[in-house]
Image 1 (tube, one colour):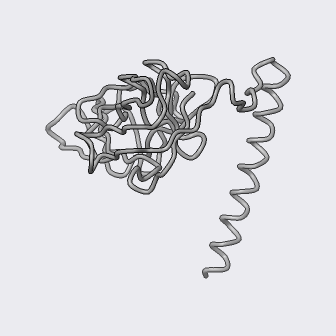
Image 2 (tube, rainbow, N blue to C red; image 1 turned 90 degrees about the vertical axis):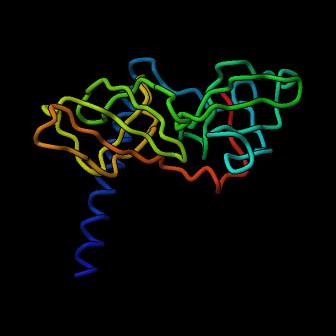
Length: 187
């Protein structure tokens, strides 16, 4: 049974890889090829303070204005997972507000369904979405940043609904655990 499940997952992964290759090829043809990361547009930063050491869902990083960091710059974990934006810049350090910061609102798209939504941070790498009951979301669905390159913000973990309520609430979790990070990339 496990071998059968493994073979099924391998087949799905091969399909994913072929679709990804086709996607990259089409973007190249249409002139929307992703530029390779260079020292000019990506700055590697060490994390000085994480949410358990800094207030709420914020990071303090060791790069600032002297290294070219600006307010509003996007911060990524593991290369392509967006986790927040730079909010305060000092000469040699910066403060990053994570998308999961309580009350932080971020525009996103439910991947595969192309539904524009607003996710709201709940703290600790968690988010929520409140939508009309008519929208169908399922556990495991991804929510991505809008744009030509779909960066995953969160993955739906639970759907909460009450038959008397015209709205549903989806609870999401970040694909990366902030506590396990040592470095981030600022673009």
